[in-house]
Image: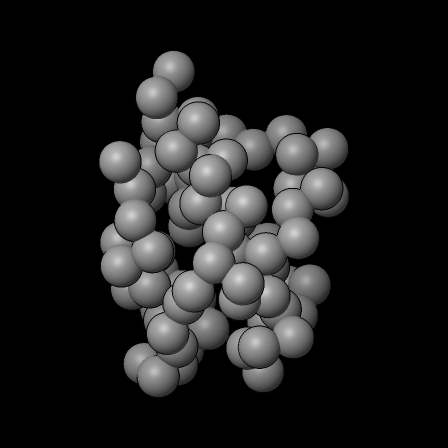
Length: 78
């Protein structure tokens, strides 16, 4: 099972910020560098790291990192 602690290094690398600490309620509003370009980089980094693919419709419904984590875990369990 993927955990927040496993996601943090990816977020830190994508956003070039070693101070990023994730919780289930983290959103783009909580990370200064999180813009549309970095979001695309984050999605790609997550797909590569966990060998999954997100559908555009899935990403549009996510409200926070917790929902993203749940989706990653769902895709990894298939």
